[in-house]
Length: 318
Length: 318
Image 1 (cartoon, rainbow over the protein chains, first blue to last red):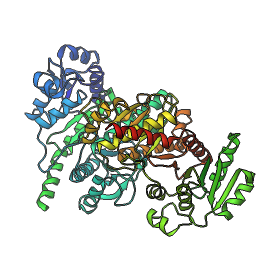
Image 2 (image 1 turned 60 degrees about the horizontal axis):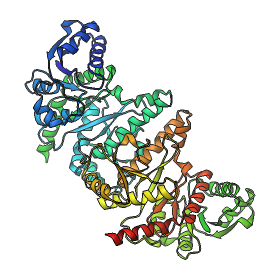
Image 3 (image 1 turned 90 degrees about the vertical axis):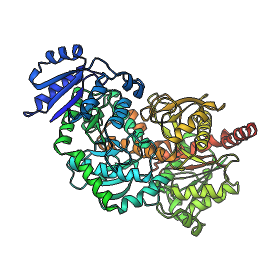
């Protein structure tokens, strides 16, 4: 199992990425093979400094870096030797089994959509966030920003992808799916939610529990909550700001601390043919470690194959 | 100045409504005339018990009550002697200058839209919420649920209504307006936000500061934040749940306490010809008092007239 990691991505790169690698290696006795992509002059000294044995990684030199605010498409084109471009190249050539970066989110998305194929039958890949719940077990919210405008069929596919993610990665056997809405009864909501409701209700592979409201997000009502990427992204960033406000005000609370989204690592791009994980710009060492573990889980559980099979079956049935 | 108040509306009615009346009367030396609408057998003993002098109110007997979960349109039709129906009747007949209820929200909306005229030129009335900000001064978020699907022109009108509300009720001289979006730059977002941006930017009566994101909601970036009612309602309910989680976890914090939306009282329906204020079901005595004060402010500042004049001017210009 080979996992490639962009060492230059994120606000605290490469330091935190290197520390994340160390955390990961310390946490397991049978680590994956790691391809660490970055400028060797910047990364090698830090790896040595952290005492990470050379046998546990291969450093892939990438002399260019895509900045956090560069226009994604142009940057990818003009910097073929950037860590992100090299990472996608390795993944496409099957020289790695997963690619992780906390770098320029736009470049990661463009790279994913143009380098890695979308699984057949999937209309729109999606990104999700884990939602800390008061019962201690995270739920999944999706889409959180990749698809600002959606059709009802997109929400149905997000529900399926979220179900598979909850089942195979979060180990929730029969995930309950809720539709984010502004009322509890069927028929409530905007045109999108009204149209999505019956499709979700009648779908044989979705355990649909109906509408959930903003107040239910952190409750145990649903394990998977689907919405279009506009509302999802607003929620994601609002949630982050809650955590930051609490921290600024010196509030110490174990549950509020779980809202520190950087702990979760990144979000996989669901619906593409290879595991790609996009980290938050502010990713810490722990976030990097968690992203490597998530990549490992995705590879071990043959997660993209599972998605492919499920969508194949659904397409055959319909 | 005559303000009518539904004493039977809300989860803790009529007790909290009565206590709210007492709080209001204690807080001012020149109170408005109050018409208290409710079942006299339920309300009169409580008024007496709270020691509220009979000279300070008129009790309007309304023998029927619309339950919190009754279908609104049917309930209003079948219960013409309910406190909500009577309240709208008094307002329409100009026997009161404002109507307040924390009862069935749907019935309040239906009553408002069908009994009270929409101000000419306004496409869709809207409801808002006050947003506690870290600088201590509340901002306004709208729409928060009345208009789940919007056109760009609706958002422009919400921006105008929010501006007038911030200026005349919140006393912010030149309110800055932000468009809720999922990116900072122009061109970001869903189709609605993309289309609304240039309209907001070029509008002479709107001090538009550009896009704001979910993380900016509680910041000082904008005084008025506009969005469609789907996202707005999700935010509103999510915000409430944050406060409830904090309370459940015993977190004591002055700022978090401001997120207790019930303190704010209710939301006026902006864009209709008479002041109507809809309270939260869980309205406390303080919320009732605050709603009476808000009604007073709206009447004193001739708020609906101001809206009428501004929209008249805009219509003449265009």
